[in-house]
Picture: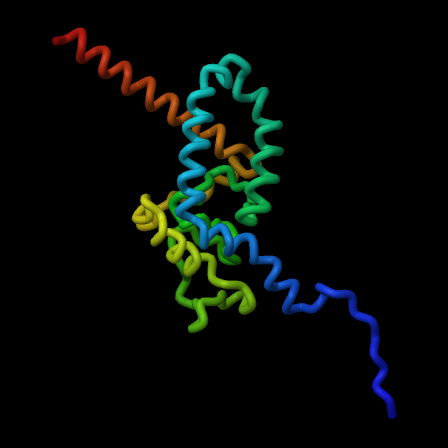
Length: 184
C-alpha cells in the first residue's frame, strides 16, 4: 500500500516554529554587549529630551511612546510590556518570558540542557540572562534583587518612566551641588 503524502508548507513543523519563536530573543542575548551600549545611548538621548517631554507632558506622549516601545521590544526581546523593564540588568533576556514569572533568578527546575521545566522546548530565560549578563559592562547588575512586579504599570512605557526618574535624580543632584556651593 502506498503512503499518502500530505502537503506541508515550509516552516510549519513544530521544531521550526519553536526554534524561530526564540531566535530573535536569543540573538539579543548573544549581542547583549552591543545592545547595552545602544540602550545607554538611547537612554541618554531620551534624558536630553526631558525638557521637551516635560513641556509636551509625559501623559500626552505616553500612548505614542508605548506603541513604539512595544513594537521594538516585543520583536527584539519578546517583551511583555510590564512597565518595569530590567533588560539592562538581565543580559537582554526579559524575565517576564519565564512561565513562572520569576524576576530574580531561575527556579529549581532548569533542565540539564538549560531548558525550562514548564516549557521543555524553550531555553530557560535565566540561563540566557546569565550568559548575556557576562558579556555586559554592567553585568553584575543581574545580582541585584528586583522588586515584585507592579501590575498597575503593565502596558506603560518603561522608557518614559526611567527617563523621568533619571531627570528627577539629576535635578536633585544639581540642587544639592548648588546648595553646597552657596554654603561654601
